[in-house]
Image (cartoon, rainbow, N blue to C red):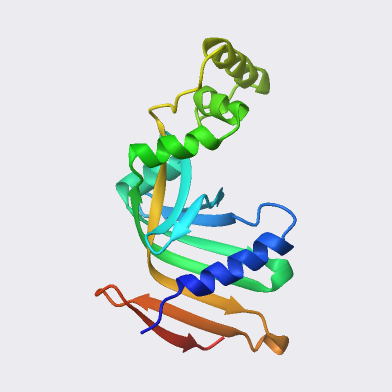
Length: 192
């Protein structure tokens, strides 16, 4: 038995030092009710043995997919480090206290943007969005911006975590950790 979180922490810390922009960016893959996949970039906002947390507008496609099919896959790719981490697992909504606490750390402009955006829906023009943003700015003038009821987070609880290290001549190194269903992890190598 072994656990993958110390390895993740080590690689993530190195990425935080070396990646110029958004070292916490990860691709999130979901599948809708009809089995159609979709992938997009999101930002990791928390992690640990209990899972990997990201936030979103719950009226957009990604949340819709996850609410219908609560399984997802994440991919961290740090090209400059020649490393990637793939994570697969079940997805659950974070509690309101956790979502509120994170929302409070966002910049005021980002908070207002969460109110102004109908994420993933058609937008007539940039001007329409900026007018909605201005309306929200006026609405919350002189007060804290509360978290919108349609905005929260998800936690992906990993079942599989794969660490991939680039090697010369495509002789890569791959390690797979699989949850054993008893709170532990099985570790093994994969062919490149």
